Image (cartoon, rainbow, N blue to C red):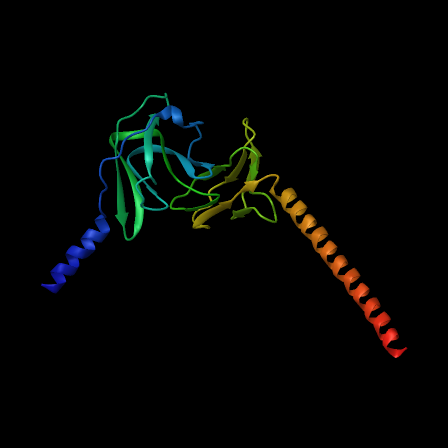
Length: 230
């Protein structure tokens, strides 16, 4: 009896649990650049748009960052001709990890996209081989040696037509299990330098005032001691 219950529990964990129906999105909300075997992440502070190329598949799943209601939204599927394709989508929890699963009635080739929550410290686990592109917001960078973070180091960094920094990895998996990008405003290092410079000037002024005050007190004490001796 105990073995039977354990078998049921393991089956449940392996199968996961399916979330309620999710509303599909509008393909016009996404950039579909037509790059094969490439997953693209468009970072935008509090959200991430994920665009992935799939080839001849009836099902594809993506790991999500968390299981909040707003974390996965506006899923779409578009073939290479730009035509919307019908699909079913659900969220599953398998061994503690949250997945978004797209299912198609027949083998599908094209692009799937969705939006999930994000931050300026982006971390994504890798589960398959292929090219990865991370597109940063305009005027932001991950290339600062002091504040920005790109792990592992990108194979290439380019600027797209919109002036956005694009980090490119060519088949990082399975050598690397995840990609982390912490991005900052391009002016942040300069502003930080001015902040510390101003702080240094302020500290120098305080120290100078303290030194002059201490000297004045020493002179006053010396005069008082002379008066006492007289």
